[in-house]
Length: 314
Ligand SMILES: *[C@@H]1O[C@H](CO)[C@@H](O)[C@H](O)[C@H]1NC(C)=O
Ligand SMILES: *[C@@H]1O[C@H](CO)[C@@H](O)[C@H](O)[C@H]1NC(C)=O
Ligand SMILES: *[C@@H]1O[C@H](CO)[C@@H](O)[C@H](O)[C@H]1NC(C)=O
Ligand SMILES: *[C@@H]1O[C@H](CO)[C@@H](O)[C@H](O)[C@H]1NC(C)=O
Image (cartoon, rainbow, N blue to C red; front, side):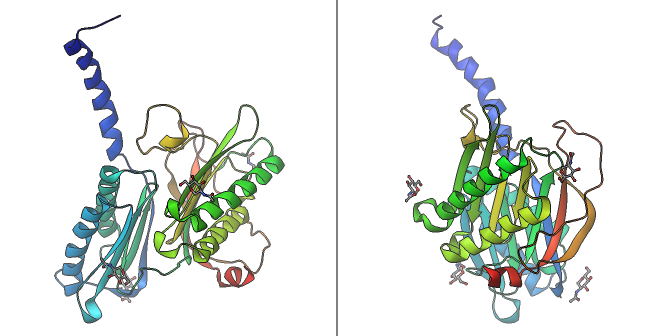
């Protein structure tokens, strides 16, 4: 059927309206406020530095998925950086960093060092240089309580996919630290995954960070869960049996999206873990909770890890 041009335009309007709001939907994962490195007060130099720093990061986010900025002098010098997931465009990255900047000062109102992870971006600042430092001593992760149908096969597939992702993210410079992959578990089950490092640590530091992240996925749940997300300050890793990034689906939907419902914190907000060697550590199993829309209830743990032994083992 051929429609007059102005009539056809009408069809585009609702399409446009339904896509646009999706860009402002970002999903907070967790925040980390460091209580032992110093606090600042309202009106102090550090506070003013932050008031300068955050809008600067938000501006930069329109132009690049990763950047840093430094404000001030001497003991009050304030270092900030952000990263957006590699599939976000300039507008999305800007909006996510804006949302995260609001969140970080709300959640960590006095701490000189803080970090907030969204599924789509991260904002952090500190009173020490953080650019080009590989950091993996904080870790936040969520997993689905639902198990995969064939854990053995799944484990093999996911390990293979992770090796490929790590190689691409760490060593393929044209990717700027971001790599995605999808694999087929059965005819009806796919696995989607992405890995990302901050582009200031590409190479073997990126690989090291991602391996620590992947090893801790195994330590948590033995890679038997249908979805898992791992966020470290310097690298992120996520897999899911449902497509969670626009580029995974063939549909014309490139808004930042997520398939699993966002997590709620249960259990201790912080915990210390020791991973003496490669032996998987069994974490306390999350309490059962009511089913959500997707029936995949995920849980969150923000953990301080003692991972130096892992690094040396690697
Ligand atoms: C900073 O403030 C937090 C509470 O807001 C407190 O627990 C912590 O001990 C303080 N840290 C220092 C170094 O004063
Ligand atoms: C980013 O950090 C590096 C290292 O601290 C510094 O040399 C560079 O000037 C920073 N960039 C900005 C825009 O602050
Ligand atoms: C998933 O597998 C783990 C470990 O094998 C088991 O402890 C847990 O009960 C299983 N969860 C479900 C929902 O079947
Ligand atoms: C590096 O990544 C690009 C896509 O960004 C891809 O086309 C190319 O094949 C990759 N190179 C290697 C050696 O894997």
